[in-house]
Each structure stands twice: as structure tokens, then as C-alpha cells.
Image 1: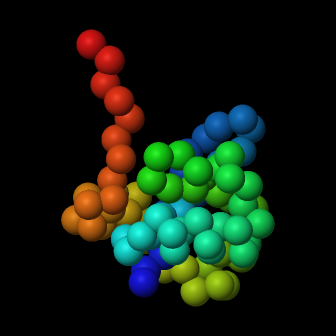
Image 2: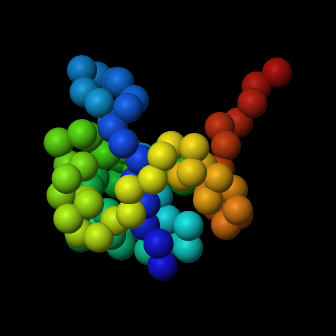
Image 3: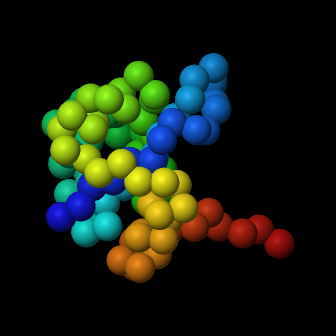
Length: 88
């Protein structure tokens, strides 16, 4: 069981955002998000978008800080990466 979060580096809607993901299962990820109070609408294909104000709280709960690159690599290695559909 490994939950991970990358640094808040994605600007959107006047805030900076991190990505919270699991390299074990979506069930683990959804359960943690519910416990933390992250709304379901924050789930985006394979991760939750988490505002920068929540970053320290997520770390305090034992989530592993990783780079954005490592987060994606670990999702791919676990077979949990869901890419955006490509329209041609």
C-alpha cells in the first residue's frame, strides 16, 4: 500500500494543485480521499487533484512525497495509469 503526492505545481482556478495517487489500488485511493474529506469530483482518471492548502495535511497522514515524474512512472508500472483519450 503506497499513497503518494507530488508537489503543488499545477495552476488552475487561482490555486496550485497536487496529484494524490496510489500505486496499489483505486480502492485504497478512494478510501483515503473519503477519510480526508476530498470530494469525489476531485478524482480525475487515476488521481485526485488536491489544493496546495491540503498538501501538509496529506503528508502528515503518512502519504509519500514524490516528484510528478515518479508519480506517473509508478502509476504506469502498477498498471493504474489512465491517460486522457486522444481525439484524432
